[in-house]
Length: 364
Image (cartoon, rainbow, N blue to C red; front, side):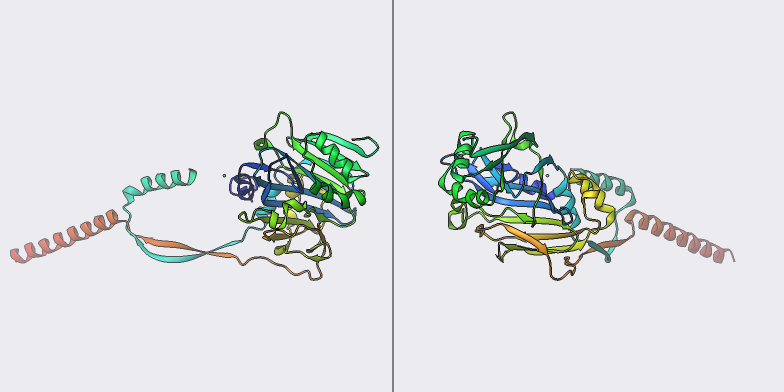
């Protein structure tokens, strides 16, 4: 597999081409006053180590409606931040359908031999041409992947909302309501925004690693960005690639999540080192018996009233799409110029023989 080829970057290209504002993470977009943010398409890689209860979370998302805004990510504990540039390419390559090639006779090819070199050149060209210190505490600050990131801890959602407003993020009532359950549970909030000297086109995926009792995807959204208040004309798509020691299932809090399993299969050990490297991890941070469970959520509008929590699936069966059968047309080569040459030669031989036979009969 050539993970970093232009073909294997299909998912990344698809996300980045939905302009105008493509950035990483947006569990709670915090647009400036008067701006509206629509989350168009998202993809995430989650690596879960059940023994150490450590989750490694990598996410990409594309947005429209605002040119400059912040975004917030909740985690149960203080996260470690690092780049993970190729993680999405690697896992999306793993679930690509297999191709089965079968021969299909498609007649005869009468292309002259003299023209074949020129046809080959043309084909090659076609191929070569995608707030107060007591209420809000800053646990960490760093630049990563082209972003300024700050990890926050707060005792009060209103105070945290005010802190965000004073530091370049829009504060609004809906954001306070979104923050309340996380602040009550003593979760940490990581705030991202583009670096002062950065560009959203030069940003890279960021890995967030943290400990948690249950692996999760931060699915819950502020009330003013979900349901009927979301853009009804802009469909949404979410892909979650979950790497763990078993097949997984997800639930929206205690309710059913609309995410469907499209792939569940053990990962060949030959790819473990590649996956770890592209996720910015060490091979020992991956489970020895690694499964990849891929979910697709096409709900629009999205029921973002809670986060999605994952657990080991009750059945450990394999789910994979059937292979794509490709009929390889082939033609028996009968070059026209060669046929003419052979035909002419045979005709000339027959003509000579008849002439010789006639001449011999005349002499006798």
